[in-house]
Length: 447
Image (tube, rainbow, N blue to C red; front, side, top):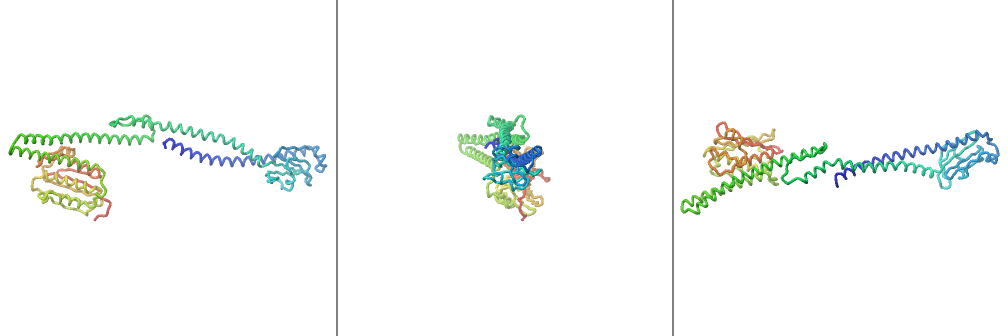
């Protein structure tokens, strides 16, 4: 159902209910007023006849024949009038209805059924006369219904005209939405320029602002994706070129030269595999977390990373804990990936045999956990600290191995940022670098 039709239906039904209630109230009021008016007509007719009798100076005790000759009363069907002496003798009558049933009625208004039909009766006692006027209720109802029908036709016309005006008005009011639809339909796939709708209504501006903000984020994501693709192509081209060169040398050489070229080609394959693994890890950080990957213990994730470190390097890792262990909304696999990258970087930068200090501090009042990895490498100057975290950027000063892809810190930052955490890199006072990640704690009681 279209928005226009829905709005018209809702408004039309609401108006129909309101107008029906107003019409019922008006009908009831008009019927009561018309009944009072018609009753007043009966009383007025009786008083008029009484005035005529008084003006004619007739004797109420005169014989009926002489009285009938002096006063002629006629009526149509549905209307009756009778003049009766107070002693009970009928002096004159319309003859359209037997009025004997009215003789015993009290003075004033009353309702009486005669020959299967209801009559509204008014009786007046005046100057020795009993004057009775009456009209049929069904004839009265016909008159009332005709009047109500004549008054209801304008209501119906106004209602239908209001719906038509509402339909056209809502159509004009929804014109900006139609313009927005046409603009979006006419756009190319790669068109991410802001949406502009002239004279957009106030209610539509938040939608336009939200859509433009979405387009801005999409433009940023596309730009980042293009930059990532360009950098990945460049990074992958280098080891592939090296591998191809060494394989050609091996093909043209014999003995130790061929073996050395094959060894260099294998080293290039290892570097290429590492780059691909990190690219896949970075892509996984942007995917939807899998169910069952909850991290109910930060310490368990840290110890898992330490246990999987090469046995020759494990003795260099010094792990200390402050506070009670707790879980974190960050999926455990991603937390382990982030910690593994930080520990790997610390081992690569630090001189052989120097210790790597890892600390985990739980702050339950602040509902956060801070994990720090401190190395004793060459550290970084302020310019390098500003550059680190860019994808495929490497600070190679002092690194023992040159097979990195420049994605480790980018992966850590992407993981922590996505789940409301933060990564901070700062110089170590005694030399080296401290990589510190801050994570939110899960809403559970501390262990």
